[in-house]
Each structure stands twice: as C-alpha cells, then as structure tokens.
Length: 269
Image (cartoon, rainbow, N blue to C red):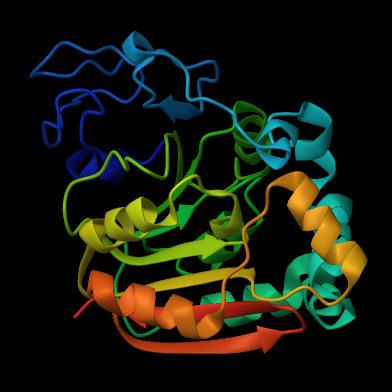
C-alpha cells in the first residue's frame, strides 16, 4: 500500500489527524485504536467498539454479497441502471466506458493534483481508471462493503498508487482538505443521509476541489418506479439537488443527463 495515504488519514474514534505510522499494523497514536482488517490489502477503519454499521435497505444488503460483488461491473450494475433509468442510461454504462469517460474528465485529472477519493468504490472499476489516468497521484478507494473491497483488492493489485479503505461515507476518516477531487459514482441514492455525505465530501476537499457524482433523477417507467421503491432507492430532482449542494457551500453546479440518470459536478470554493 502507498504510504502517501498516512498523512491524510484520521482516526475514526478520536478524529486525531495522521494517527497511524504503519499501514500493516496500524495503531492510533492518540487513543490506541487498532483497526482490525479482514483483508491485508484493505485498511479497515470501522470502529468495531461501536459495532458494525446497520444495513437498512435491500440494495445495501445485496452489496454485501460476494456473488453480487463479482458480477457487479459487468452484469449487475448495467442491468440495474437500465431498469431504473432507461435505455439511454443503460447504454452509457454498458461496460462503464461512457460513464467512466464523463467522470474522469469531470474531475479534470490532467489539470490538478490529487490525491483522489473514489467514494463508494465498489469492486474498483473507477479506482482503476483514475489510477491509470493519474499514475503519479494517490487514489483512495473507499467502501463500506467487505465483499466489494475484497474484489477491488484483487482487481487493483497492479496499481501501486491505489489504497483501499473500509469506512462509512457518512463519517470519512480523512483530514480536512485531503483531496483534490472526489468521485462518487452510482451510490448517492443508497445513502441513509445524503446531506451528511455532502458535508463530509466538502470537508475533505481542498479549496477548488471538484466533486463529481452520478445518481438517478427520474423513473422512465412504472416498473422502474416500483423497483426503486422496493429496493429503497432515493431519486433526486436535478433542480433540488443543485439547490441542496449550493446551500451546503458548493459552487458551479453542472450536470449531464444519461436517460433517467445524471452525472453532476460541483466545486468547493
């Protein structure tokens, strides 16, 4: 693992900055917390003293499945997006190439320094793409699902600039202003409290940093609406999303529509 991640980490228990000196056997120098990881290639920053995070929705439970994690990029995600956002969005994420292109260019990787955070990274498709596009910069892939991170660890093994972290998007274990950009592809609809996540993203971005995310905007069919309701999936009106992000302190909102989904970008002033 790239030791460049050490200065930007924060203890999930006491919030001490840069608390770990050793990635293989991390121990907080302030409160003594010793993260226990199920995978040697993942830094697990869930504070087990307060218990594992609650899995509330059907989709969240499915994301903990080893089978879903293995078929996610190639089969599960494209079918899921097509069902909930229509053929236009499904075509764009088929093989992820179209959506990856939008996200990478939205982050302006060539014009600004990292590090980069791939928030809710799943099995690592976007983390790999960011690492390949910015080989000199640290890319941190964060997810709460052990199953997803196990697959991501296998698939990102060839990238020395990728570090995988297990943590909750509602309480990011990083110092303020740690990242030049945050990528958040296809997970916003599943968060328990999006506003808390938005505020955490803004906190860990340095001034001028970019936040690029994708989510569902509208249901193309009755079946899509019923499926979203059954899975506990939240949809976002683009106008409300723009106003929401503006109230939190982001600027320069813009978006690209992909059928019933959208990719948006904002900047921390």
